[in-house]
Image (cartoon, rainbow, N blue to C red; front, side):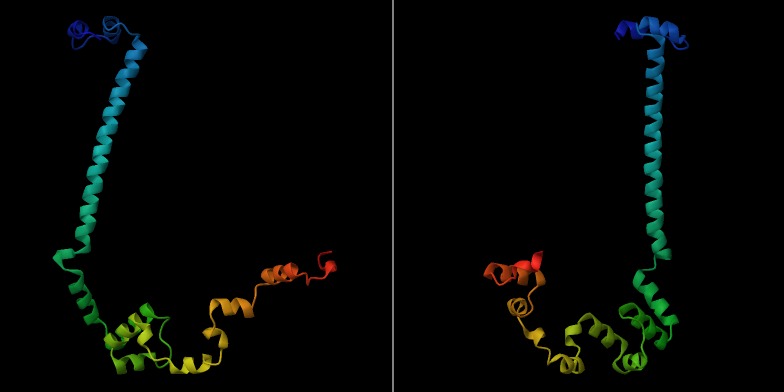
Length: 173
């Protein structure tokens, strides 16, 4: 489209006149105008969606800290509402498999902080009873090579016997 053609187009002109000036069919002109309107509408919708998303993100961020209260302060307020036994039960449920008989008393005796530190470093927990029960299990002290030698996998055993020629011929019939 030339600058002369653009200069001839006046506001309020009929589409058929504009189509003749720019030398394209009216249907093509309508399609181009529709496409431009759709592109414009999509742009507005995309910007609107971006704005709504940003507002929602900000709102959710500020909702996490109502009144500027930090998570630590909120946790301290919540902890103050629980009794010692309720706090211990909560920790036992969250860090373990729930409270067993005697667990609450044991945690009270060693203190909640000490119990949490024990759970975070289990290698420091003395476990003499279990060690006494498993000390006679020779397999726990074997290397991987020793385990494979003493307890070969069935497929490996067949391959070894087949390589040596110790398999009976009628075994696979």
